[in-house]
Image (tube, rainbow, N blue to C red; front, side, top):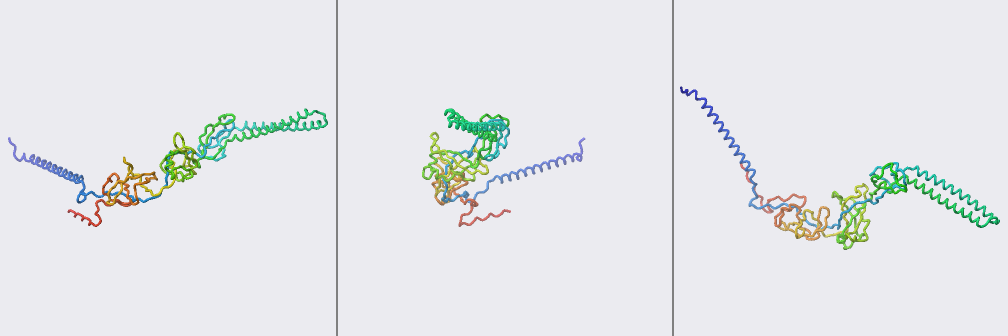
Length: 417
C-alpha cells in the first residue's frame, strides 16, 4: 500500500535543510577567496610615481674638494728583527746541572741562565794554584843559587860558565811562574763560566739542551738564544725607481727621510713612528733594490721578531693635492676617474691622476680643482648625466621628489571615507 503523505514529510525537510547549509558554506568560501585576492592585488600593485612621471633626483653624498698638504711615501713588505739576536753558548765543558730561567721569559743582561757542574773546574783551580806555588819556590831557589855563585865568581872560585848556567835557571824559573799565573787565571775564568749568564737583555728562547747533558770539552755548545726587542729593527728593500720617484729631488738621500711608519698585519698602524738607521751603500745588482732598515721603540713588546709588516718610508711633502675616499675612484680602460656634480646637479665623470694612498683616501695629483664636488656614494646608480640631489657628508640627503625652490608644494589628497 502506498504510504501516507505525513510519513514522507520529514525526509524532504531534512534534505532541504542540508542543501541550504551547503549552499551557504559555498557562498562564504567564495566571498573569502574574493576578498583575499583583492587584498593581494592591492599589495602587489606598485606605488604611484610622482606627478608627471618624472624620476626624482638621486640623493648622493658629494665631497667638496679643498687642496691640502700630504707627506709623500713609498711602501714595501718588511720583516721585524731584534736589535740584538744573541746565541748563548757554553764556554766550558761539563755536565749541565740545571736551567735557572723560564723559556720565553724576559731576562736581564748578566742574569744567570744555566749552571754547569763546578767540581771539575774547582779542581783545576786548585791544581793551578799548587803549580804556581811550586814555580815561585823554584824561583826563590834559583835566585839564591845565582847570588851565591856571583860571590864565588868575584873570588874567581868558579868559572863564568857556571854562573851563567845558574842565571839561566833563574830566568826559566821566573818564566815558569808567569805561566803558572796565567794558568791560574784561566782556571778561575773557566770556573766563572760554570754559571752561564745572559749577554744582553731581551726575550729568552727555547732551551736547546736539557739538564744532565754532557757539554763538549772546550765549550761552544748552543744552549739558547736571547733577542733584544726594544728597540725593534725592521728590514725592507725598495726598488731604486720607486725610491727615486718618491724623493723630492729624484735622488735618494738618507738624511732627507722624515721617518718610517709601520702597518701591522691586522691593517692597523703602529702608534710610534720610527727612524731610518741603515741604508745600504749600493743597489742590489740582482734585484735592483736598496736595502733599508728602520728602528722602532717597542717598550710594551707589541712587535715580535719575525713578523711580516709593511714599512712606509716618509720621503717628503707635497702641497696642492686633494684627498678622495678610495671607494670614489673607479678604474677604467682609460685610467682612473671620479664622478663629480656639475652646475646643473648632473653627474659628470672626471679623469684624475692618482698618487699614493693616505689611510682610507687616494691622493689626487691632477684632474680636480678647488670647489669641485666628488660623489662618494650611490656610484652604481650615478650614471653620467643623471640628475642628483647632492648633500655634504654627515647631512641628510635631499628629499626625492621635493618641490623645487620657488614652487608651491602640492596639496595633499583628501582622505576617502
